[in-house]
Length: 399
Image 1: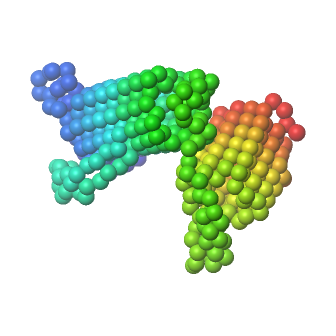
Image 2 (image 1 turned 30 degrees about the vertical axis):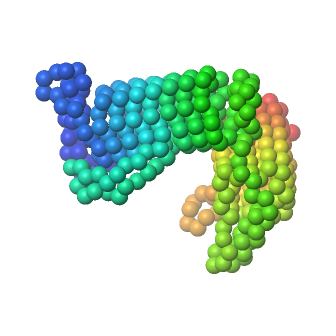
Image 3 (image 1 turned 90 degrees about the horizontal axis):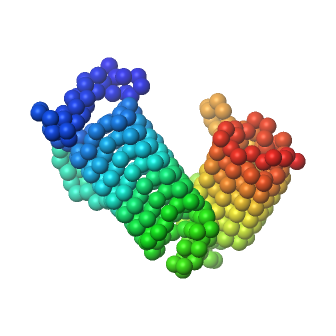
């Protein structure tokens, strides 16, 4: 029978405890200890605070949702490991091999990742006791999307081509770190130490930088506002395909799916973009007045200065978007009923930057504003009534 909190059987948990105790003895040099090889094991959703896994072999192991706060993971081999939603706060990952690991949504606040290897991981066909038949060779980018790395130590770490979309690195120490080709879209680097940090080819758009960070970018010849590729005239061809897709209910045309594209100042007023995916794009000063963005996904996009007045944003996903100085005047942010689901699908502005934004919308219901920054925004009761504002920075006045 499986444990209700973890989903693991009693036998599985007992075996893991035995292996972990044996490894701890090995680390301490005690009699009866043995180095742990728990590659490809399922260790998800487990309470493991302070666990000692130094120098262990944990290739492809899943720690998704587990509590590894203050864990000793120094020099541990964690290639392709899964840490989605895990708590690694204050964990020691000094010199760990983290190539191809997934840390999406993980808490790594105050963790020590000095000298850690977070480059893209490549793993050939592997056969182990837990995975007897060789799997296909895989290559995977290390992902830290929406991860909390505030005050983390990343001195000398290698983050080449790492995906840090939406990650928080406030006051993190990146001295001597290699961020060559890293994706820093919507990443918060305010207060981060970037002394001797390599940023060649790093992808920026909506990156949060303090004065020192902006000065460093200028010194390195990097545009702090972003360096995404423009679509040009091809945008209108893709919009036509999307309209065909909508008109035919998916039987013809093609859904608009854009990622890491420069759409700054794009003329998109009155365009039907419902159900489109426009993620991690530069939409600064774009004209989206009166557009239909119902159930669209604009997550991690930079919409600073954009005109969304009168737009339909019902059910739109705008997690960690930058709407600084944008206008949502007379916009609609209602929930969208979906099939048998009891609650309507809400407009999601979680972690959004709404500084100085005009949020005097026409209609709203159940908007998710958790941890959003509304400092200096103009809001009305239509928006605030029934919205989830837990952890948000609210404006001092309402219109």
